[in-house]
Length: 279
Image (cartoon, rainbow, N blue to C red; front, side, top):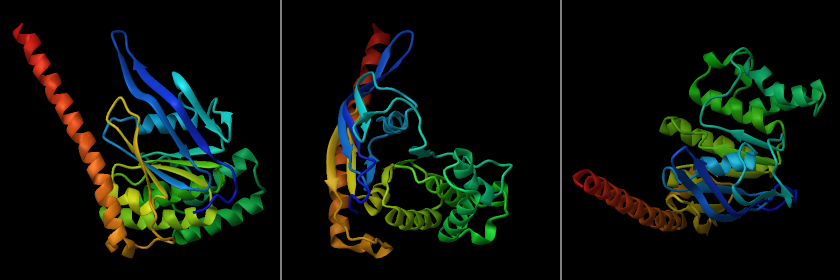
């Protein structure tokens, strides 16, 4: 992808974020820095608990850094905004609205477009995600994959400057997940927006990404940034290419190194706990 609209550049600059409790402080992110270039699909991956969702929340404006800065197009992020939308792991469709009305909700609530334009955009998006024949169905009448597609359409109709995806396909079966990846890529390549996609699946990360940001174990920072130079538009055949396998191996090696560190730290913590009990 290329920088088409010159908007949506996200800068994480020396960010530290900690969780406070009455007795302790747990550092989640530690001097974390990276850039999400405008008009690209950047994927974030790392060990469990490394702060991926915290990064999404900071960019969305739901949280603030303890140190450092989070910027979009050079401006500080001070809170939530329609220009930055999040698709979470959990289904968030309004159960009392039809599939069509869910998609229509955003542009009508913000008055970003006329009802006629919103209608045309809604129908077009539902057609692209294969839900044209399910417009009058309620969320409970849709499968999990269909609900995810409806949520994707509901988000993208608002034309966000930055789309934040927090493991949105987690929990779907393998076939549905592959289908969702293809629908998502098609919409991203048409919209030319800026996307930050969080996943725990290496195969998904490499299939989707322009750039892959690999995080260290907690307290987290950026371990490595890989350029994913696979051709677009992407289809399933790319998963059998030599270059895909090279990139997958490189990513897995880095993640394995961090997993081993986490395992050693966990083992040391267990030994320390036993020593304390014996003392």
